[in-house]
Amino acid sequence: MDQINAGDTAWVLISTALVMLMTPGLAFFYGGLVRRKNVLSTIMHSFFVLALVSVTWVLWGYSLAFGPDTGLGLIGSLEWVGLEGVTGEPSDTYATTIPHLAFMAFQMMFAIITPALITGAFAERKRFKAFVLFSVAWSTLVYAPIAHWVWSPDGWLAGLGVLDFAGGTVVHLASGVAALVAALMVGRRLGLVRPATEPHDVPMTVLGAGLLWFGWFGFNAGSALGANGLAATALVTTNTAAAMAALTWVTISWLHRGVPSVLGAALGAVAGLVAITPAAGFVTPAASILIGFGVGVACYAASQLRLRARVDDALDVFAVHGVGGAFGAVATGVFATVAVNAAGRDGLLAGNAGQVVIQLIGAGAVALYSAAMTAAILLVVNLVVRVRVPSEAEEAGLDLAQHGEVAYQA
Amino acid sequence: MVIAAIVVFAGLLTAWLLAPAEPTVVSEPVLPLAEGFAEAA
Image (cartoon, rainbow over all chains, first blue to last red):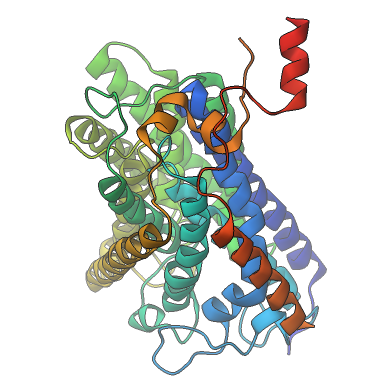
């Protein structure tokens, strides 16, 4: 067993706090995008998930995701339920220079934000009770297994050689696909001529994007699990890709719609952060510029397609996290190089075209599993409690109808 | 201790299952602070 390294431990604990801040940041990001009658309910989704998954992760989530494998590389055992055996000493398997509890807490924050991301798809029309039940089930039955597939050394996708530095497939693709399925099953919001968002507070959304960007340094650079050169690489590639995607989105909207959209800058930055997530510790800063540019184009196009489609993914979760996550997964297979991270693998441009295929297999498996399980969970939850609120409640707004509170006077 | 923790959480989960699906049928906010603001206005 390695000794605890003070620098590594400090960085991972700080990163844990940084990633925690992303979920309230997401609440602001989403909260600004909805109509004023639904802002509290939208914020509540993220805030409640923060509390909910904090407990389920300690009780069983961490064990299912990172516990000793049950034999097929599909899910962890219940050996660490209630964090039995997870202590202040380093793990033999994960991040061996920091306390096991620090690694567990860092991973907890990823488990929290993933179901919170999905909430943007069914914003303004989902019953809170159904949301609570869905979140418990999704976190347990979808997130934990996928995290095990990719991040447990015994996971079957890890065994294939899938690269996902900080959760491009585990977090963003899984939640983005789930969001699309949820939007299809819950149906469109009432009163919309076509699916479109009506942001009630763009400054709130930009504040949320800023908090997300800030927290993402913990998300990606923290995933180096040490205070080292790899963390510095991940921090630089993260910032560069976010910046490039923001510039790209603003430029396209400027040319396409005639205005350099403020909202576009926020959405573009988040798209860049999503795409660099799986690649952050495997690619060079120069590659992150190309990734940021590419995802800016891809996600802008996806958001425009969403406006023309009948599906009402209210806050563009699929366009940003689903498309961005898939784009990042493939881009990792293209740009990865062991010159950046000796523990990684070379990608297409370093002479290993097979890595792109492996990344596609990983992304496809995660997308299919998330889609199927999300649909199944929603069907079951709908048997217990109707997922969608009545039309009167939707018209009144969920803040009042579901929570008995309002965000603003007058 | 772990079993006790799981039992407590299961209690919360049961409460969520039993909680009303429509928590409120209100036309006015129930937050006292909001009423104070409304009066001040």
